[in-house]
Image (cartoon, rainbow, N blue to C red):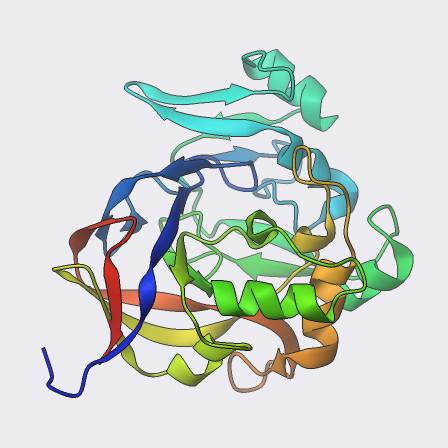
Length: 271
């Protein structure tokens, strides 16, 4: 550990999403490897007609995924609807409104459709808007990186700037929530730096997280809230990668340099 390590906060919450685009489960502790939190995005729904991975990034087709909850079990995953009813294959297709298959192995060159978020803000989740095909990292159901970090400072700042008041961090689907006393979009300054989390986990912060339409959508009991995206669109537009152009951002992606087990309350250091 470098002598210049700077304390930036503590682990506030840990989240795992066993099925892509469904509601997840909060964990008191988690093992983190180069594939992220154990069991995260291990499954996804596949549209057999298009071969695309189902994702609420295309809200016109798939926003109902966010009404379902996925939980890890000893033999796989359990999916329930808002009433707590466990769903099998037919129930899943009925819940999302089209035929789907639950898969644990990503297809070769797995791809999903991402709606242009600014267009969704203008037209709403039912609008027919431009879609961009996004190729997922080989062998995974991740969008970009295996770990997504978000600070309470960013969530608080979005709430301060929103006419709707406080925003629920669950809209942004983080894996690791860092409780920090800082103000504003503090993790922007961590790009390219390393974090030490708990006794062993080491991360490199790679890029800011570009936000899609998902934060605006209803998440289980949380109603639709366009301001959850509109505020970052107005106040935190960044270029995640060269050539992408500016995007509304909140949070950061991370690469795992050294694996480790982390627990809520663990200290987080910028090194």
